Image (cartoon, rainbow, N blue to C red):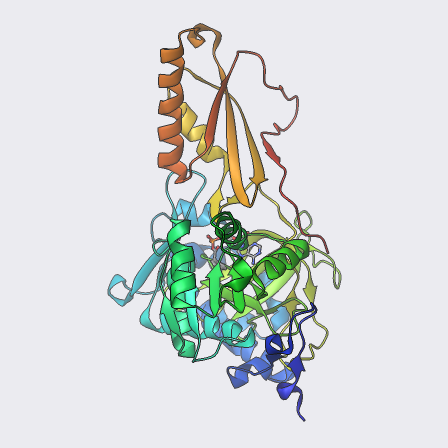
Length: 455
Ligand code: DLL
């Protein structure tokens, strides 16, 4: 029996019908390491060639004397420039295009620190690649062509909905494109249509289970068997809870829009980390302060090069995500390195109900409202199974009033601006002047009570 036919029993006490047959979607997932690395060098060179069409890279290459002949091995990656979210912002909206605009097939985006998103573009080939990469991890996690998949990710600029949608289609399975919101309706669809697999953020799955229970429906009785969760951090404890609450097997997948969206890495049936799709993305794990390689198995910032994307090749993108990389062989037979859960971020980005949120967005909203002082505090909690945000805004003494109507009006205006800029509903609390803590050094504006993953 070859490794690829191994059957993995889930680690929890579900029946044998949950055991996952380990099948590989495409042969490139099992390329011997030497071949994989040779392919990476070839693709990295192609990528540098294509990136030279982007003014940002052109300039960086010139400054650092980088030509195609300087890229001969993977070691040469170290000489290439980093790319940050700020670089993408500085070239808003599509200054990183390496193709002419008529070659673009789609644009997605993710929230930025201000009201404007960061846009990413795809050619038709990029979209085909993306579907295949999503198909790989979905298939690794038990999805088969006879399944029905309920997708409860937003369909829009966010890459979650469309990315997973076409990945599921590529596997050949059927889809209920439920999109996000209206949880009662989601439960009705899950129950009546009988989806086998659920695709959404892990916190939304917990919430679905909770709402179902409150409606007198035992979520364990739903026909669901598998779930593919991603888009936000979660923990092993959360996995256990969701699996128990819903009687399913849950898999983790990771991605970010700047690189491609979901499909950057995902778990196989062994569930010992997320296989990085290294034939398309090179991953480095660096100490975020020194930018030296983190030691084997040590946590560091993931820096990713998207070698094969045509519309927007991206070199050494600093993800700000902290994780570790495991290069030991995996029993599933895939030869790629695996990343741990995301353990944290090097910046202050929060992910709330699957939406990326920067405290500076809230600051921007407050600046638009006369009377809201610059002192604010954001508290994030998981109430029941739903992320909730409270924003406490300190009033300026001269605007502080005992007239209920005036205060309510001010609160509503803040509420509207915050929702307009972030796309999220939050509780807005106005507090009296001089009540919020003041800071000498870096302000600590965010208090996040949600559980965090550890290595
Ligand atoms: O969240 C892409 C995605 C959608 C991945 C659906 C998986 C499923 P962005 O909106 O650009 O893209 O947010 C990317 O989300 O840098 C991480 O901080 C976080 N993130 C994504 N997946 C995971 C995960 C999508 N499995 C940012 N665990 C990334 C922890 C995750 N964090």
